[in-house]
Picture 1 (cartoon, rainbow, N blue to C red):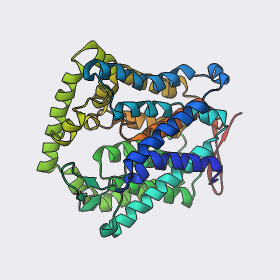
Picture 2 (picture 1 turned 90 degrees about the horizontal axis):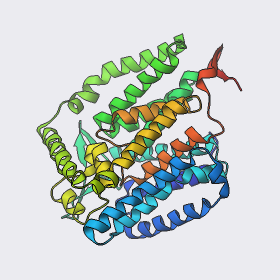
Picture 3 (picture 1 turned 120 degrees about the vertical axis):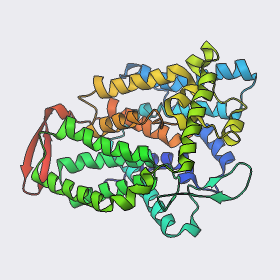
Picture 4 (picture 1 turned 60 degrees about the horizontal axis):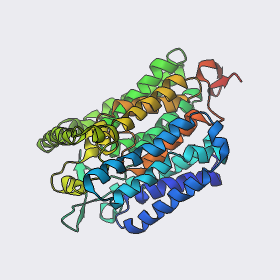
Length: 406
């Protein structure tokens, strides 16, 4: 893997906007000021007349502008603009990153290297904290009314919310694609590593869509190209899964009374925010932004928009934001299908399946917006994208590779 200066930039963006893996002593006030500064830098770097001639510039500009429209609702109903609403403009600026990547000639390996190092470092932190829970400082919770940090436990495992599951999922599909084209122990080990990272997040939805994504790749990409080596490794995966299934998944798949109560809260949350969405044409179209009461609803009523996926994002930014999401999927998966890399398509389809409950780029997980900008660049502008429909399989003694027509 080539780790360039551009890869360092990608890594630092992900690190900063993930609050350094949700470090418990993260200085949120200083980070807020840096967010504004980074947003201004991105805007400055986008002052390039060539952008007007680049494909899909309107779509990217729409993703930049739309979150800011919710300020109209905030001003209309709240009569003031809070800090969180101003911060929305920073989030919007992250969608201009594809322009920055293109202007400075970022390559696929620059972006992937930064992502992989970020995800692997997160995996190292997960393992270290599982082995040394008393030293844990990342991904802990804190009640709004207290000062003590704590960690949830599922399936007998501490669940540290570093919130790197989307990055790990993306890296899993990337190395799965590489593994299907060239079987090596390196790719096999990295696939296992990212699978482990996804598992210890202990989310049924994320585990499910990782499995569905791999199945999707078989059905639509590799069903005619499976070799005996692939079947051997898949058999190893299956045997490990069957042997360990009772330990890995029994408690995770069995709903406890607390989790059933959590599902009831989601239903309540759906109706609560659904009512807020439908209170006027304005809130329906462009969302409600971050009302002053939002923190009370989240901390005291335990009603959090991010728990209800698409509906929660619609509360924040309205139906136009969700339509932009669907249109972006259409462009990447359908319109650009000959240029979009397979692992990007699988990632987009998989995250869409879970979007009813886990939106692919949740408002308050800003590193996901950086990841989404990377996905857009790979689909729209990367010079190393592969036309998978034109590929040809050649079997060599050391494995299976894919040659691509120029």
